Length: 309
Ligand code: UDP
Ligand code: MG
Image 1: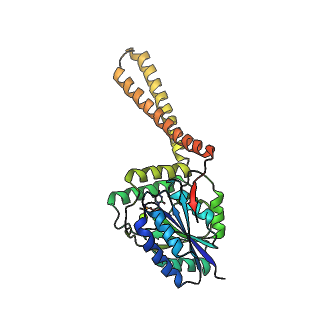
Image 2 (image 1 turned 90 degrees about the vertical axis):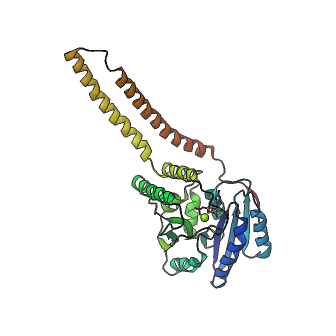
Image 3 (image 1 turned 30 degrees about the horizontal axis):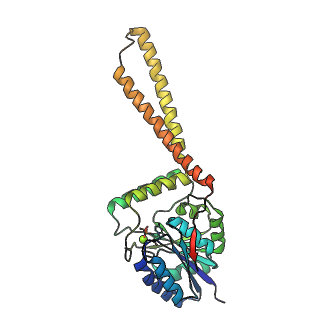
């Protein structure tokens, strides 16, 4: 029996892409000595994505499974659901928009089987075709998170990767609700090799990431994998305590020496606003963490499946 490779494909409003993706990936696997198990995950799409998946499944029963969520749970949830249902000895993740080049799969599998890596991932070395401003912020984000988090997050790494069973089981052990995949994949460790490739545009449809969506995603990532913002709040508080103590001494001595007790109303208001700003900022940071804890302790399921085959 040929070993099975499961490929998990999260899809959100991707009706136009599924058929083309399916043909591309099937073609690659025709020439490989592996059995392909495709797991399409319909993440609450509003278009004909599910219908397309069913079509593929009916056409290619040996290779295709689909899971369909009761609503949109996000790509991270779709990945988790896929991993939970994958049966292969090797498991891969791929976007359906062909931004993850299927031609790289043979080389990825080689990295695992011949060079004995546990994970082979792919890294975009260019960001051609992406808005400049987005690349700028993305780079900044990677620099920041790597400075403040112990979990290394490599710039340009996509979710496109193939893993051994053992790695998949480790990832499934991390049952957290706030799933920042980039962090989780790196956190579990294992020997990882990155293949490099040039960025390419999506086949059809539009990216589901807005600028604000990405910004929030980065904040979530930082909060899930770093406590640095809390430390920052502590330091800001500490520094402002020291500064205000020195200022207090200065004021006491100045008053004792020169008199003049009532001047300084405007400066007092400015200081008051500054300090309340710091307090609100720190409360906000703490609140962000509490919000995450709140979601974790509720222990809600990460996804809900409506139908599957
Ligand atoms: N996706 C998903 N759920 C979502 C958003 C996206 O399953 O809520 C899927 C989407 O269908 C695609 C992949 O995740 O297969 C990557 O999405 P997208 O192309 O929008 O992201 P980008 O490539 O721009 O990072
Ligand atoms: Mg894409």
